[in-house]
Length: 231
Image (tube, rainbow, N blue to C red; front, side, top):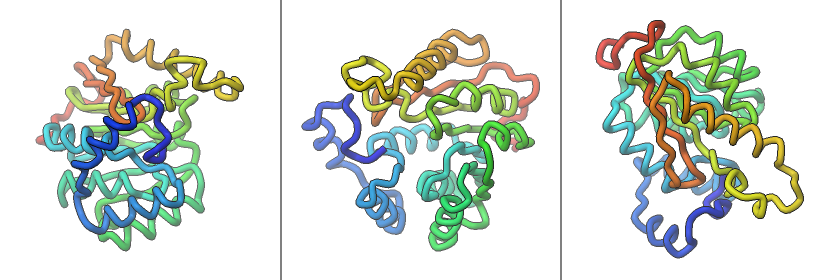
């Protein structure tokens, strides 16, 4: 989502908060500006600030990302989590993945980040894990599929974070979808949010920063049972 696409935060409040935003590196800041100018979806600035705090608290070393785009968020994860961290990023389109790989190479994170192409639900299921953190930011109508593909691969106490859960306010109210263009996505997102709020596999909180985020802490996981410190 671009920086002006969200309907859920008062524009004056957003402008004020974004005034405190600082990119983690100058090079990442330049990539963000290029993406925003081209209206290529990257994580929103206030979303990034929340993610940075979560990463610094959790200190994940193995990260799975669903939805690569230009490689911005994968590079952000690699920078914040340090040189020992590894990121696997899944992207549907080879052309998009090629652009992301070039950006990642130019930024110097090629040794930390692997970009894999193909259907995300399938490629996610193929990853061995365990992962300390999974970041989901791809096709909104498939979030439950992605969750089901990765839940068994996340360590106990690990995180699954989903971005854009409010879909520019459309999840909340039909007034943000007057043409009913997104009704299927809206229905599936609401079903997903209901599911993760009730599942016994995780404790989930919803955050209104950016375009909305869900943060799920995975409970005792028999399959992904290594701690972050030992991965």
